[in-house]
Image 1 (cartoon, helix red, strand yellow):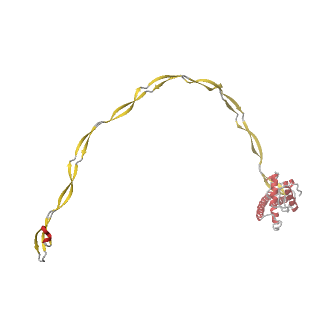
Image 2: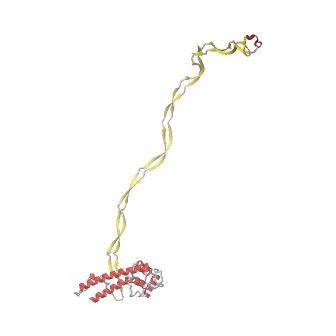
Length: 379
């Protein structure tokens, strides 16, 4: 019993190692720059994947140890639940990977009613035709016609402004009169000089202590002519009669007043195009059949499950086998890099794309044996 458990642990370890075969091969050749096709980021991702697989392997070993403890006291075979931890019917030299098989769906087509049967009503319009018809446009009638008045012109003398009176103010009348008046009256004055000089104007004379003669002389009056305005007649008012004013005008007068007369108007007819009803409007009922549509839906056929699949591992991942895989993928148009015999990200990616296109089992970090068989590679 212990030998079978250890053999199962070895197989499980091989399957875990296979999942990281590509990464381990890349790490083995990382020290050879000439042959390496993986970047440092890919190497780190591969190392991380190896670490995850190692952790998973440790968990499986723990489960196996517990199972061994439960079965150590008996020789009962491993239960169906424990058997799922190991590949079924493993063979020496083969590697297996436990993969998740997604749920299987099946497309089911169903005919469903999209619209119920109905009825459409079509209206057939009335039918008309054109015809000529003589119709009365205007009935006979009478009308009053106005005979205009006759006018003539006459001349007439009319009063424009009646006679009246007005008070007129007559201003005062003045006259300018020239008059000679005394400017300085006659008077006497003393003057020096001999009396003979003064002649007859000398009234008396006197002798001063200096021997000069002072004469009392008579100075005659002086006159000047002045003008002054004197009143001839005072201001007054007078009443003046204003005669009436007349004007001859021409007026239009009625010689014969306006009259009316009755005039007969005959009826008026016209030929017009009329539309006559030939057939009245009607309706037509048309049955509309029900409409159906085919609807496709997905139905779950099987639930998702875990399954062991045979994969390429370190046993058969030799350089020759990897070169054969790369060559076959290149011939199929999936591998573009150089054929170097190194399992790397490009080789795994090409194998995965090929598997998906061919609807075969596919893995991101392993190559299923179905891909190898589809490419007709003999390992």
